[in-house]
Image (cartoon, rainbow, N blue to C red):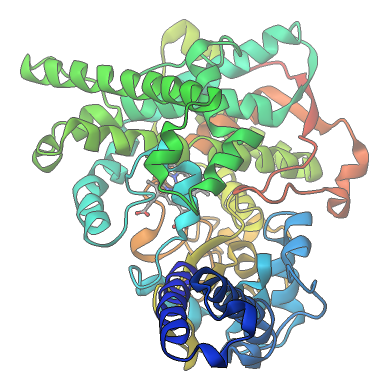
Length: 552
Ligand code: HEM
């Protein structure tokens, strides 16, 4: 829009300067009467100042139809509420406004350079945004940020390409395939527990949960997706793990280059001869090369009829539709899954451990369930007995605890869309270019949907009167729990996530008594959450004491 307006201004100024100097010089001030450049520059300046004043002030403060919506108080003159949002924990400001500002499904606020944002707050408005999927795509900024690393797979594709990719790849994520992955989850979970026990000399240790959850999650996701062990549990300096972590950590150079893509073509910015670009090319090629090698290996085994593994890629290459997809098309899905499925799960595990420390009575309850159903890490090592999906089916407490933590601390607390054209939501005109925030955490805490105890941590809400797991947690709309979103862009790996978490959390609580190093954090009000990034995790990490318990 801004680029279009700028082009219009340049063309209009050029044409008008010609007409004025040629045909009406007397209408110009004397110094400009013979100067095309002078007239052109003056006209451009006047129009740009007018456009800037309109876009920065008149429209966001008074003229946009959105100004009639409920709004938070305050906000800066130039950057609206941007600072408030980014200086608080991810999703926390949206949650506060959601509860404090009376509204009919939409709240308006001004963001960076006063750009227009709306927060959708009711099941009805959420449904509108989440079902009109391609009318409200993801903001292009996300492609600038992570497109080079992830590739254009399910996470970033839009329109017919996304529809086709989803139809092709979704079957390979089906629950029946996930059930076959339990041995992968369990063996890696047990490896982490055994290493931690060793570090603590079989007695007690202190560790940062996020660090170990991340090492465990990366090994599990790479094993589950393509049967490749990145070796992160065994060695924090394992080469593939280091490359991968660095790729996902936004450095200053990374952010500057990403921002440049808003003004210059992305392929040009990616080709600039700077150190960061060279490093990035090598790192991306290392990861894609690893995926390519695994894909070729699976195809070779398939041709030789010796493909027995149960990871996603081994399953995927056996689907006829996927066999037709180009090598790079399959690799894009792998890099998407590794990117989407590593940080999110490690953050989710971190919050589960936090809740276990805050609610030690649940540790006792879960430990009993885990020790009754799962084989111990020692048993796995000595007899090879693996965990199965049925073991987890028999553990409603463990599943309820995980569900409640995912509701209370969604690893992605807020996500966004934007209006590509003028659109109507709930009868309200949403001008083209408006960013639409989906406040996942705020919805998950909504008392109208979850009842008066919505703000309490209550795993029991996921248990029926017979003690069995209840699928909805007692909420009455499918737009009540957005941890994995809803609709055609919902997470493809919800079943896989819960299976993996049950194994990792089960192995930790089965082996250790867990408590917080900083006891002030027992009061949740003292827990600071990271902001500004995609995931919401403990700002200063989560440091725990783990005492090894006998008998498992
Ligand atoms: C606790 C863990 C996870 C959470 C909370 C989570 C949450 C989400 C959310 C909220 C979205 C929608 C984002 C948006 O459209 O704005 C999403 C999409 C997606 N997730 Fe997950 N995710 C998790 C783990 C995983 C894992 C392990 C994988 C892969 C194995 C995965 C693969 C994907 C993919 C491919 C999409 C894009 C789906 C599409 O647009 O069609 N996620 N996830």
